[in-house]
Image 1: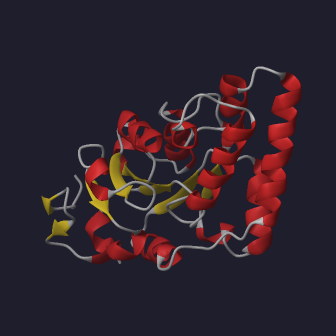
Image 2: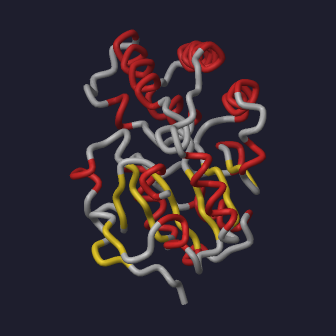
Image 3: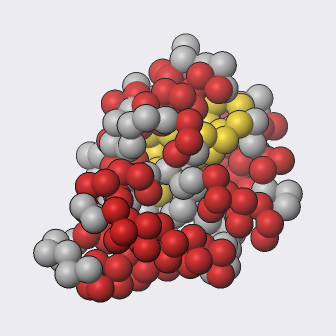
Length: 225
């Protein structure tokens, strides 16, 4: 039985402070962009520009695709194979050039959870090329995690629960014994559908828009220290 004890799961007010509030869970599953890495604004601008270049009709395209894999984006929105190849090239050029700033307190929180005995897993829709660029900038980053799930490990994108089910499996845990940390609507839905306890991080979307989509909403991982 989990030891977590919240007075109000939508405000973050609780009787146990710090990472100890998650004692009793077996694993923590983290989305990457917008949760651990402060990169969502850059990606939003990139995809907005791609949408404009290719005259996509949806004004919310850059937000609609958050949490989904590149393959899903390309096959859903770009019918022409040549256009798909060009978008793929532009994205990887962009990812090779940008800086990936780690959110303040994010890795400290991951470390605190590990000290409580939880396994830690990254569950991202990013592909292996992007992860290579990230690890080149932050060589010690991967060492904070027991496993990493990327787009190569799944056949269905968030909001399907498969990515978090795979993450739980890699941690050797039942999904109900896992905590998911997510910022996107698609990711939050994937976490809920997996059966995990879901923490919404209000970095990409305002906290009031996350209410009802997560068991707990906070502004950042640092707030949980």
